[in-house]
Length: 511
Ligand code: NOJ
Ligand code: CA
Image 1 (spheres, rainbow, N blue to C red):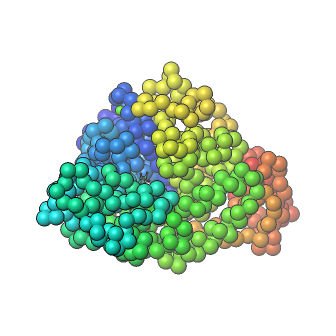
Image 2 (image 1 turned 90 degrees about the vertical axis):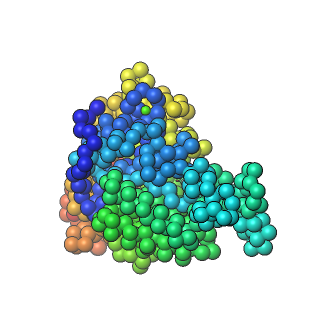
């Protein structure tokens, strides 16, 4: 346990957060247990900051940490405290202090779209139409729901709920409340100014009183129904101004789980948004060992759409997250393919996110509990911090080599990640998450190639070999400026006569 207690002033991290570096998403419950109760906690993260620093991450994103009745905590009952399962506010301040001391930023999941039904706002609101909190949520009489044709909703990637209107048991009022995820998560009413003020007070509290460096915004596109989407955009613009005023340089990343054209307007208020379509394409091309999806052309199109709205956009790159099947399973645990996935994640233009355990090849397919299993620090008998809130079904010491074993193996996935991230961190273009994508003239089967250019004009060419065999990639006239390999994931890469030899499943960076 670290000795610092209740620090008042945190050392600062590099701002603006997100313009450089690699972020790491943590499901606190499953990461590391510090007190032997089997549940991952904040002190468990603090104890492992040196591991994260060594891996090279520049920020951690913690899934929700506030009190909640569910295991995942996406339904908050109190926005101003820490769920006792995870620790105390002092533990959290110490985590921030120790993270900042290592130049690691701390981002928290902010679930503003809905609360828990056990939140006191909802408990009050449910008392009846005259309650001062009534308008914090959306209540309608069943006649009106029917008349306005609001009774059902189309399912979306993030919610399978078709009947979003719910009744309160034992209530004297016939009105029903709206909850697009499920009855336990009532949507808040962002048309109501006193609610907005409460939300902004919460935002300032975490940034200024507690010291976090930014937020991941849950369900950001659902504050209003699809028919009213411009109101979402306007809210996030206001939110962006509040954040920037409270803490200049603080970070925001939206979960806007939809097509890129629909994501773009959210960049007016949010600095980053996740690229969900790219996440679907990456495992496809890796499995086929060929870029059948035209990845770079797609990315160029997407970045064009984002840049139209905000030239300073940050594209949040993911291989998977807590809502998706793990990349380890999608690639069937194939180590070569997992290394190619890491190569792409850490060289494509944007801000790469690692979902905890991806670096050791953790496995998991839905339902959700299975994609959020305990991290494997060591073999079962040696592991003092493995969480036990559930037994791993997909990720066990038999299916995944635990971290301690991988650290001792130079060819392991974790060492591959470490090598890539540390090179990325050291290179001014690769580490520039705002650097822009340019297409190359190279069109060779089994490869992916692209140029990244920084604001100061400096550029690199990146070439990936998706196949098992070495490929000699011939430059087109546009790439003759490439003279030397500055980074390669495998030995045996060389440039000569306007061509570069790339070993199987390898990746090279050229200047
Ligand atoms: C999206 C989150 O990522 C998901 O895990 C959660 O259940 C829903 N939003 C509701 O908060
Ligand atoms: Ca614990």
